[in-house]
Structures are given as structure tokens and as C-alpha cells.
Length: 257
Image 1 (cartoon, rainbow, N blue to C red):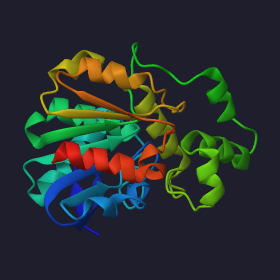
Image 2: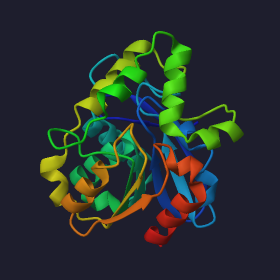
Image 3: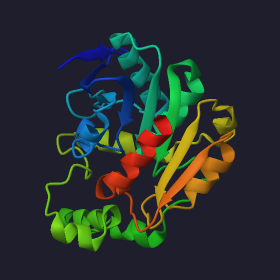
């Protein structure tokens, strides 16, 4: 597996699939590139996809020091530099969408077009999940917490027909400290003041029934980023990109095309 080395000496593992124009796929919090395993092939008729293992996940280095969404964005640039890729389309979901915001702000010349899925501007204007959702994720046993997370990710009908395994529940190989570092990075994200500076054409995607990252964040992002388009996927929860893959990936490819 190829690696890029960041400015602070951390090895970032990355993966290349397909052929065509470059498309960077950024996973959610505390997840490796496996987040995309179920859907990335949909892009490969026209796109060459780049995924990576965030620091703290997968085959990447796992330093025990603070992480941030800005820092994750710089790690993406280290991967692009290692590949010699000057510009790419970028599609980030959940925390990956937060990372993608900073990538477009801090490295605008590297982003041709931007897709932000099931994500938030963070900070004082971001819409937080409800207390009921927080309580559901703080169950006594790991099995109960996993069950609650699954219900936030997917609809009951989809879960009934897809018994797993699931790629969106977190990287089981992560050490506990790295999970805490990822949570802090996501919680401290605040790009509100810089979002108007995003120059890349932007599509905002969200499921209408997403309670893990409330759907009300989508219009906030679309209104804040100049010229952004917004598409809401009816009935979808947080993992809209997997359960509603045909609709979602069709929207992404149409936009990027």
C-alpha cells in the first residue's frame, strides 16, 4: 500500500482505483477508507478514485497528539503531492465533508469541484444533534450503542434486508485515544467564517431524515457557499450514499460532469 508522509512526519496510507479524472473520497469520523467500499465502484467508469486512511485509522500512522479537520485537509494535500495530482474533484461525507471544506478554503487551487455530503459548518451556527440522539449513542453496552448508530445510519427496511457487515460504524482497529482525537477534531470544526471564500463549484447533499448530522445543516452550507447547489434525498438517513447509492451517486456524477 502506498504512503504519503506529512510535514509532521506521519505516514498516510492511500488507495487508488479506477481510471479517468481524479476524485478524492473522504470518509466519516473514526473511519478508514473502508467507508467507501460499498459504493466507490460506481464512479470508476469515468473517475479514478483516491481514498485514504486518516491519521489514527487503518494503515496510517497513529500519533497521540491533537487532530483537527484543518490538519486532515493538509494530510489530503500530502497524498495529492505524493501522487503528483495538481487538481481533483473532492467528495466528503460526514466529518469528511468538514475536512473537504477546509481543503477548498486552504488549498483552493487543488479543488476543481466540491461535494459536501451529510455534513455541517460546525461552530456556533451548526445544528447539533438532539439530546435524545446523544443519549441513544451513550448506551450501556457496545451492542446497544452500535444498534442505535445503525438506526441513525440506515432505515429499518434497509437494515432488514442488509444484515451487514457494515463499513460505516468506525474502524475497529483504532486505539481508544485515536477515537477520542477524531471526536475532538469533528466537534471543534468551525468553518462558518471562511465558507464564503470557497470558489469551487459546490454541491451539498443530505438525507431529509438524517438526525445524526441534522438535515438543517444542508441549507446553511448551501446559503453560505457562493453559488452552491443543494439536493435533499427524501427518506434518507446519515448513510444516504450507501442506502440510496443509485440516486446519490447519480447526482454526484451529474454535478461533476
